[in-house]
Image 1 (cartoon, helix red, strand yellow):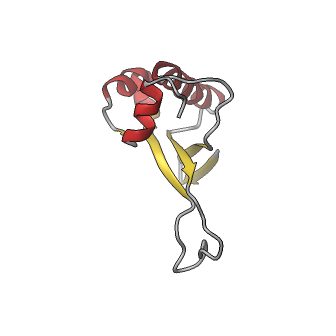
Image 2: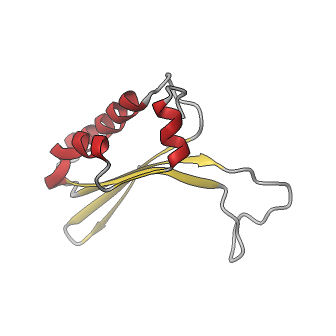
Length: 118
């Protein structure tokens, strides 16, 4: 988790990365996990104005691939993201279900829908 403050505005980012989860996850379990992380962040930090949550998976980085600097190739891909202002934190579960303002990589979402856990 990384947080930044600009004046009175506090914005935090929560990143879930990797390909193995601590338990098998289907789509409802993923949504519950993400909603729980978001709820927990707002509960733990009353000054938090906005939370950005996303998930990344690693990409193959072949030997010799430039992974830093101006010509860097990406080593991870974003497969899920959601931004939640404090005022809208109560709508997270509904947004996860209907997809409003949520980015899903189609293959990642399909793997969760099949119950294969990402």
